[in-house]
Amino acid sequence: MKALEIKGLKKSFRSNFLIRRYDILKGIDLDVEPGEIYGFLGPNGAGKTTTIKCVLGLLRADAGEVSVAGQPAASVEARRRIGFLPENPFFYDYLSAREYLRFATSLFAIPQAEADGRIAALIHRVGLSGHEDLKLRKYSKGMIQRLGLAQAMINDPELLILDEPFSGLDPVGRKDLRTLIFSLREQGKTIFFSSHILQDMELMVDRVGIILGGTIRRQGRLSEMVERSTQYYEVVCDRIAPRELAQIQGDFASRDGHFILTLPSEGDVNLVVESIIHNGGRIVAVTPVKMTLEDIFFSEMAGGAPPAPTSRSGETGGGAR
Ligand SMILES: Nc1ncnc2c1ncn2[C@@H]1O[C@H](COP(=O)(O)OP(=O)(O)OP(=O)(O)O)[C@@H](O)[C@H]1O
Ligand SMILES: [Mg+2]
Image: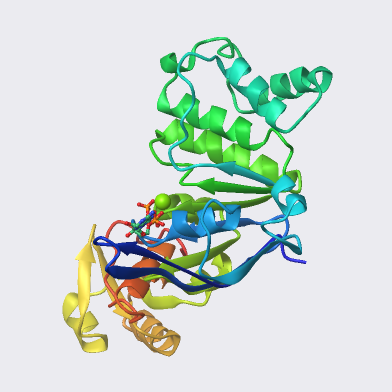
């Protein structure tokens, strides 16, 4: 059973005094497996928040089905399983974190005796220990984000939906958040998070869905997406005269005393390597250069055409990407 399943989700908005309709979601299909970290990737305005709002029932979809662990998303059983961190969490400035979380536990009707222990554990977990009685107006953006996560976890949900959780965090905050999300996965939770920060996705997601123009343009296991897509091979060599190298392979670059050849296929690599060795040269590295998530994302944005091979200076000999 899927932790989250969205089928044919459509949503349009009216604007210009109700004259025009804008189709924002044009039939979103995606599914999230239990226990995985799923990255919902798309540029600004792609419809990530709109999708999430439809899942949570904050917006009424025009068409489509959403289910959480097999239950219709609108049902109480489904809602109970979800924790949600909004894009720009807003909390009352004059409450402390402890007071705010007490309020949150009351919304879930968690008994007082249990609530205090749960709040203390969550405050510790998100790294806010020592700041729990500080008024929230004194909190930094990162601390507010942590509190938002504590709030999202208050009902011990199976599925956490985080809308742009990394936005506004500094590198330390990002790393802490990644660690926290990994620990949640270890605990068996499912995490669905949206972002336009490719780097954060690449470092942590099991699967990714790329939303563009109101549809999911690609969905899959990140390792497979990146693995399958070797763009080109880079052969680095030295101890060979440029004139001899030019006869083996006309097009090459020079960097840090080495020569770099960019080859489109594995077959070419074998031939070129043999010829270089035959001519007394030395092979320093052979690197299959894979597409990064960033390449995949930008190629989707450009209409699905594979990006042109470009040599990545400074990465020679660094192993396969
Ligand atoms: N209530 C609304 N009424 C009219 N248009 C809306 C409404 N909500 C969203 N939109 C439009 O829908 C599109 C998608 O917005 P959405 O907030 O879902 O994008 P997003 O992918 O979350 O972007 P971001 O990365 O900036 O958060 C935008 O063009 C936005 O202007
Ligand atoms: Mg958004």
